[in-house]
Length: 255
View (cartoon, rainbow, N blue to C red):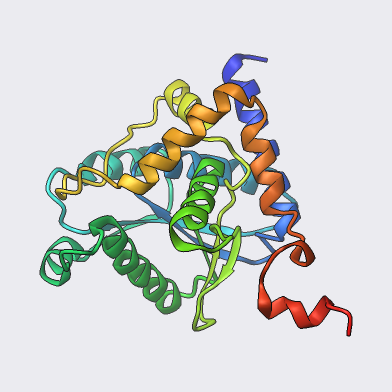
């Protein structure tokens, strides 16, 4: 078995465990995969196809690239790759860049506002075209960084859920890469030669808090080799009776 085949096997093991643990994919699912052209969405598409070929559970998926009009986007390169690999895909043109520029307030984070707008477009497209689930390429490091950002800056113990119902209950978001460390994706994308493209130059040079969280994890991991696995375990091993959440207090406190 080659190094690339061994890495693919490891990635499929991670995604298979996530699918089984959180019931991410069911018989007859029609899944819309949000793709940016980055290493994560390329890896997600590749692994979903492999899973589709091997799994007894039958499901469909389609890639959707949202062209938001950001300067510097290489949509043509991504579309050429999707055609070459014979993926079912759509390119959806929505001028989110201009809308964000118009609505952005000085205190707002541009990436956050853009992501919310793009998510709404994904939700709408999924509903209008009969997709019952939306798959996103967030990986283990994304979940850990979000968890730490919420702890330090938002005062809540929360992260990105592997299986999430939208607030209005009309969409379901799944994150099949939730167990996959980013380092494996970086190496797999390199070995497979995916045509990785950025989302464009929209002027947002720094997402400071996420970069801070990523740097913190990297620094701590040098001293704690199993840091990521420990944080992953912590996110799935909550003990409300040992926390200070008053919403849960009455449920377990003795009279």
